[in-house]
Length: 167
Image 1 (tube, one colour):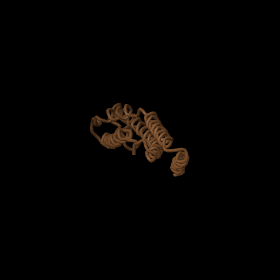
Image 2 (cartoon, rainbow, N blue to C red):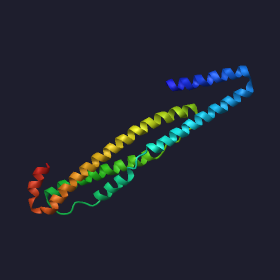
Image 3 (cartoon, rainbow, N blue to C red):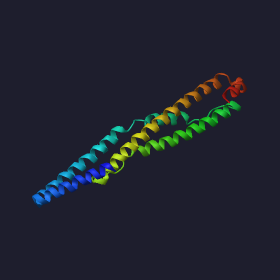
Image 4 (cartoon, rainbow, N blue to C red):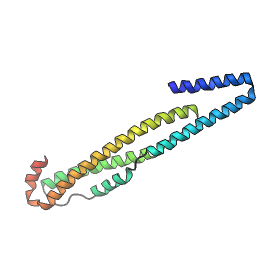
């Protein structure tokens, strides 16, 4: 809110100064202010593009790895299959969030557009941080599932023992 008042006050001061100087200067000042605002909005758009993180390949690799159901039979396999399906659902939701976050919002080259761009950039940076943390957590849980799948494959006869340890 403080920035909005500052920009509005600047515009009013410039307008008042130009009224005393004549209308020719007022149009030049207005044009300079429009150029300034447009450049700042473009700068925020550029920064938002730079803030984006290359998370899409990682989440797609995770989706690919979680695609196939756990083979075999038994209670440990069933428990691991439930975890795999839950991880797949989380990864799909995360992929949708990343795709939505990757789309840049439309920004208008106005004073209100400049304020919106500033607010959006901060919000988007925080959301990218959150999504990156969620992806790291999901990858860690997938690694844990992978270790259990390797145990199940190597020791199919020890499912009861593994199920007790898992739960």
